[in-house]
Image 1 (cartoon, rainbow, N blue to C red):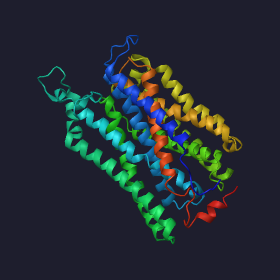
Image 2 (image 1 turned 180 degrees about the horizontal axis):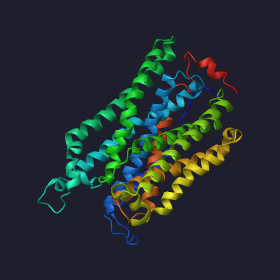
Image 3 (image 1 turned 135 degrees about the horizontal axis):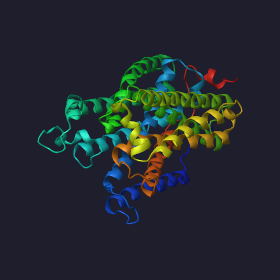
Image 4 (image 1 turned 60 degrees about the horizontal axis):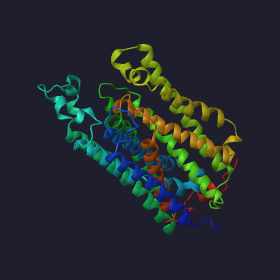
Amino acid sequence: MSNLNYTFTNKTRNFTYALMAIGLITIIVGFIHTPKELDVNVDQHTRIWANLLVNGYFFLGIGLLATFFMALQYAAEVAWSVAVKRVYEAVSCYLPVGATIMFLILLAGQLHLHHLYQWMDPAVYDKTSPKYDALITHKHGYFAPAFFWTRTIIYLGVWNLFQRGFRRRSLEEDLTGGTALHYKNMGKGALFLVFFAVTSSTSAWDWLMSLDVHWFSTMYGWYAFSGMWISAMTTIMLTVLFLKRKGYLENVNDSHIHDIAKWMFAVSFLWSYLWFCQFMLIWYTNIPEEIIYFQDRLANYGYMGLMWTVFILNFAFPMILLMSRDAKRNYYFIVIVGCIILVGHWLDVYDMVMPATVKGDHQLGWMEIGTALGFVGLLIFVVHKSLAKAPLMVQKHPYLDESLHHNF
């Protein structure tokens, strides 16, 4: 089979359609019908919107951090990853789709179609209202609609501009060759990293941390960033291995796979370090306004089992299973570990959202699984459609020859 062109087969396409249909049907059924066997007090619509936020943010993060990884490869002048460049480019192509979905979820909140964000309710700023909240009122300058939406539009708009620019110049480079476009991408990559260093944290504050509006953590932005990063690297790895299994990417060898697996291993440790530091420091100091976040998860709303499951899945499994050289080169083994990591970090975002929105009325049921499957199908569809639009191997990248001979 040719190494240059990927065919998005009807079988794969129909599989993605089926997953997206499951997700769409799940959401529609959820809006029009609350099953009687679900003995919950929380508004069913809140549960639906909370699930949309979990998946909207999680899958947006995969596209965004693939863009970050692409910028990082340019800025650091990395050669080994050129052989899989089309893969992480394709994963980054989900960013416009994810950004649109995230924008619509936030807009729905601003239009009061859901009430996930307490600070979006005008009543909390009205001293005559029983909902008045003095602490949120002190934060009104930051959460004022004009300022919030200015930030959100800048985040999503600039991220997408960089992603489209990287992709467009990469495809153009295949035709023109030379180094001019490569050096331009290097410069743009460095600019993106500077912009992303700030906005990756501030967007996490705005879209996730503000769900627990009375609480804050200076480590939260980095924590969210590390979870998105490992999810993106795992998605890139699984896509590479899928293509290898289908006979594509003939020039991608075990050393390339090993290097991606090292990223999975290393970023898992970064996430674990941030998880532990945030939890341990707050637990040790025991300051009331800080511990409320973990009280909700460990005591008030019954998320203790989920919280520790997330830590074990995202720390112990990657550490133990990906430590050896052989493990990083065993394709079937990596697929199993990769699926565990993705499920673990999806559950992590779930744990970041649900205690602040549905409180104790949470469950991993048909709604959660169906919605997640729909987003999985959408991600696969976008990635594979992008893969089919360009040769799988870049043609005239200045580091291509070095990457093709990458071996250790």
